[in-house]
Image (cartoon, rainbow, N blue to C red; front, side):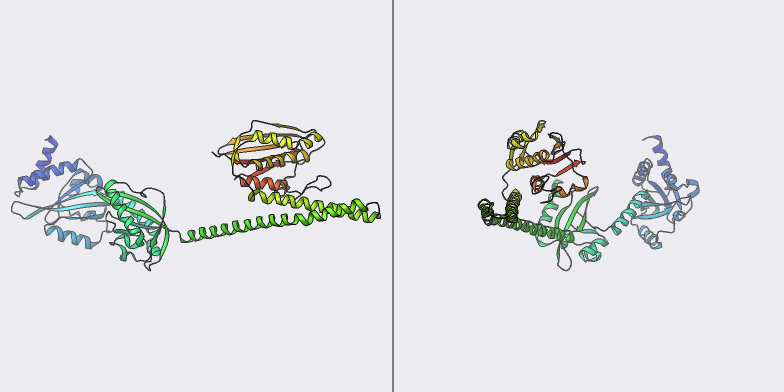
Length: 505
């Protein structure tokens, strides 16, 4: 044994000249030496409570030297914040020959407060009488500060906090839990947590707890929140969001559950689902109505158009000028009505007659569009160019219609110079961004939203023919493909229409 340890033995010998059993003396000497190396303080008093010995750790913690405290009572450390009843219980315990453990809120020499956890034991002499008391103390100030903060959190948090031990017995039940479950904490503490669960969850809870204690694995521990159901005192079952964590101290386990009542959220979700279902049903009915109405209107409208044209051919030169003019108005109106019905049919068919998505080569689609627009391109001397275009998952016929509408508009709404149209595509993250750029008349930014509305026109039909539904169909096609469409333009400076298509396998 080192010389320093021998010195400690000598000190113990001096303290116990009353004939302490040598084995106890040996044990105590080793104990004091071992504690000396750590941060725990040691106080030895006589049977009246007067200090006989303190170790250096005591001086480091309290600020008192051994000389200042020898012969005095440990009460010099009192802060006045430890209940007097605790001191009374301590004294009654140790004079009866039993060991006492507990916490003190003490005061250092400089007035600072600190917390300590103490174990105080009686030491008997060879005759079996209590001769001394030994106190071993560990400073727990930082732990108590954390406990105070945690206690404030437990008390004030809006989430219910419930802690259970490894047997499923409730150890913590905060005010938010009382409010949520309608129990007072006194009704729950010390009881099995299953009382807060519907019957259907209890067996799963038991199995999960056993599995974790035996394997260290749990399906929900340490993971994000899961949605379950809980049981109130009045028997009401309600939905909750539960997050579970565990805390360990040696062999002791504590499981902490953070619980939120999601009744309102689930109600809102269900209301949203109901609204979406109603909207979907309404849209389906609207599409069906639009299709049926426009389809059924075709036959009488064709009859009106045919007979009006027949009237015009047979009697054009046999009627006066006013009659000829009236007939011309009727023919034009009937033809425009037929065009509007055809466009409305095309708009409704985007969703009602859409095909399954398949790999589509956009270059091949563009070639087809250029062939379809051959006459307009040649008449306007338009130049159509493009970069390398990707293969995308899409409805081929609708993608063709999308490109045809955008390029057709670029050719139609041209200025004095021959139209120049360029198509490109760039992949950004999980989507392809397509652009169709022209050198046409451009669009004022204030009309960006309006041009995608059904039958909205920015120009008179005398200047640019059409019903104003082309861009509405483009928007509907892009949205069916889970994309978006927008533009950048200035009057007289051309326009660039952009649309996105998700990258799909």
